[in-house]
Amino acid sequence: MTERPFALNLPALSLSLRVLFTGYLLVVSVGLLMSGLQILLTHGMADGKLGLSKDDIVYSYYGNRSDSRLAAKLDGTMSDKANTADKAAIIKWVESGSPEPVWDSQIGAVFASNCVKCHGTIPGLADFRSYAGVEPYAAIDEGASIHSLTRVSHIHLFGIAFIFFFVCIIFSLAVGLPSWLKALLIGTPFAFLLIDILAWWLTKWFPSFAFLTMIGGFAYNAASGLMIVTALYQMWVMPLRGRSSQENTWARLPPVA
Ligand code: HEC
Image (tube, rainbow, N blue to C red; front, top):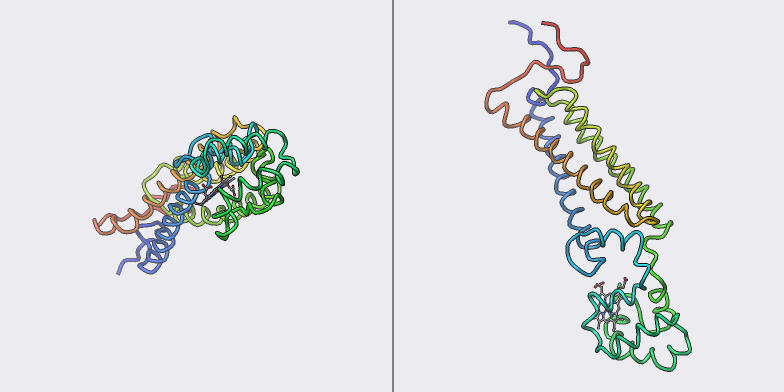
């Protein structure tokens, strides 16, 4: 019996490792889809229209500084919730600095008749029954707070780095690709993860950086998608077609002939 050389690569993996890696990659793929969906539904709606646009990103991180949240919503998804006169009254009040005496004498009643049937009864919605509940939404919208940015940034960095680490380590076992290309694909998600987070912070102060968060998110999703598809193909389709490789993908030097 001849001894077979040890080959560390995707098509050569045992069935149990292939099942383990496949399970992980499939769950991560569904996770990536869900996070895309979630971004569409939260940030994507920030400008009042479905679909992620540059304005959504600007509104989420920089805010809409010409406007308050209240005025923006009355112009967006809440525009059908009051008649023109009532909307104008609210906006005029907001623009005059949302004074409390005017709330008591006039604006409180406008909210009570138009808004409170949802905002005050539906849990999770902003509560507009009192001045204290409305006032934060009448302030100039400055987007994400430093507090929420630091929180979301560190969760994102730790969590996503973890996900990418395992996707990339599985992909590092792929055969038949030039090593520079593999290295590039493996480096891409980490580089763009950093760029993405940096872009959130830059957008908070300079709205023109919004495009960078879109590029960042797109690039790391594209790179991980490519790695996942390649890995699945090499683990399952290549062995089925009887294609194997002697490549030791984790060694730096090419195997001696
Ligand atoms: C039929 C129910 C309903 C009524 C009536 C209603 N809203 Fe809303 N409002 C919602 C829902 C649902 C959301 C969350 C989805 C969204 O942002 O579009 C919301 C969100 C908002 C937000 C954003 C709050 C946030 O957390 O960012 C503002 C501001 C707002 N509404 C203002 C108003 C005003 C002002 C009125 C009255 C003129 C009003 N709404 C009437 C259902 C309602």
